[in-house]
Length: 254
Image (tube, helix red, strand yellow):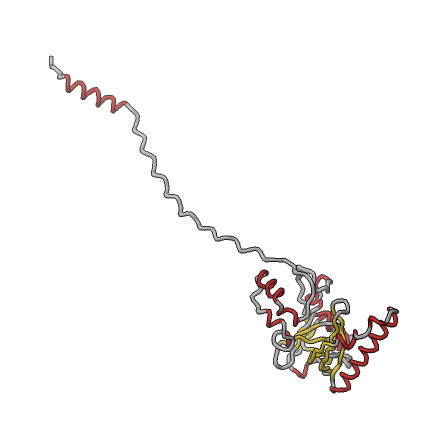
């Protein structure tokens, strides 16, 4: 009979337990490294839609109250640039006798709203060439179409404050109808003197701020007006809404 030492028995028992026990569960994998936090850029500042109110003459825009309003609204443009009607950018603005427009080239190219040239499109249309609906493009100057004998472009040359000449002594006329007739008579006299003095001009007296200010406006009259381009009516009058002060707009209104 062999004698087994206690040490060997204990080792055998431990080995048996190890063989009978289930396989050891492997340790869990290390947690993935969390991604770097994304730095969120602050949202763009919301545009300011504050309406300071009122309609102002160009010369008034250089006043401190308007300069402060421009700065508050984030306008980068120097208000002085908008207070000089005969210098850029206001110097490029012209009058069509019902619409405004702007010079956009040194060769006299003018851009305006699509509906402002409907009459010119009608004038140059024929049964086979419907410019109103199909639009028009002159690729050369010889292909330009006349806007008609009544077409005019007016370039403002001079302003004159005539408030005193129009309003002097009106407080003595009690009858409103007679007061109106007197104002009209003075305006016509100012216009006649202006047009007699300078050839090829048209003059106008305009009242501002409810008749508290009057200005005599002298404009050079251009008569040779030609059509260069107009888009298809489906673009220029898209949706049938010609009012160009309603937003948002999706119209090629030019």
